[in-house]
Length: 252
Length: 316
Image 1 (cartoon, rainbow over the protein chains, first blue to last red):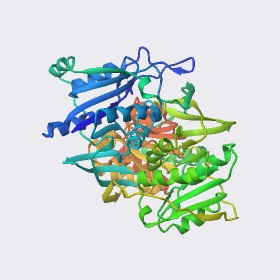
Image 2 (cartoon, each protein chain N blue to C red):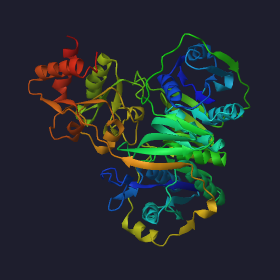
Image 3 (cartoon, rainbow over the protein chains, first blue to last red):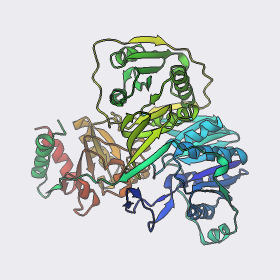
Image 4 (tube, chains in turn yellow, purple):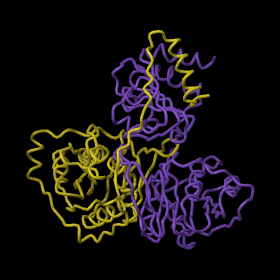
């Protein structure tokens, strides 16, 4: 079996977002593999660890620095990586075109993608990739098992969760609940340096950008900061309820 | 035409549908607002929607009793193509955001995902959306003959129903069998109200101490206020609550009228899921907890004393 994990390099959640001339500027900020994508890598490695004959291939599309993210994933244990190099910011719909073509070329059986990308706050990449490949998809998966050609597990839906069953090939989008991503060990970091990281150019994929980003802004909402001392609990509680009812008017 | 796919649950039209109608009417694009209802045994939904839309298209069939991303995207793309829809509105729910990218690919259309505003000017749609864990507002434009839009839940006001019922038409669809089999469904009863739709959310963090503490403090207060229940990642990891209740980077994003955080310190991953709430209230023992930096109101104190006192005060 061959598994493709889609990797996004994003701003570390602990970092401040810097905007310069109306654009997000990542220079000098700590960048990491998107947490949601790490769950996919971990799941792929667990399937391999369970004794199934699996090759784990990681794919990233973006500027040169994405190779750091791919090296991290190789250090976690992925077998090889593909980097489609571009300075263009692709939204998920054209990006899925690249992912789908790579999946086809590599004869992929199973694709993992984060449930939400933490830079676009988007859910679209996994689904769009599945559609281009005419594959079924299961999103927001929190538990997964492989039995031959069948995947079973649990995933979240609008009003709860469901147990599902689907045949490979398929696309799975991940979330917390799957196994916690492992940290790269020193021997694995050394080993990863020798693993294949193939670089491709974007032009062969014929993507068509239909969205433009005009500008970005950080607008922190002004907060009232009316913080009460709770030493006298009944008095503080009564005052808070009064404020919420009659000043903020947000509770009945 | 503007095609709007109706979200409904248990025989009722969801709030997101009313919000999509407002989005469609404010858009500034020509053409009737056409509602598409997919499901099985959906007459009540159709009648409710008829008071909102200019016309209603209905596909009432047994194989649509349960949502499926492939069936839904195939149905919407067929109706959109046959009806020459230039704009397609799909709900900002999890399911809507799951099948809308498939519709966009099928129609070779751009996807304006989870937008908080959108307006048309000649052939171009301009929209705003949150990015980077809801910390940034980006302005984007799309210029294409067909565009798919998912409006963010809660970002648009709910439309008022009219008194005239729009005409209804049955549509024939060519659908294949579903490939994802659902073997068991568990509606998480923990949250009585959908987190995404709730006007009041009461959420608990590690500071509530235990699963029992969560029930006694967070559930009790939520019940008293008719609120939905949310939880932090730490609480979910500890197994005190189900994943479905998690708010934050790896959970759900909510934007209620008021978010009441009990025993939550306010890590950035949690703030990204609730930082856009209109009013934030925090109860926490630690006066330096980051949650107080984003709070409108709060009490510094022991949640085990403060929360029961709040519940008592609410009854007066």
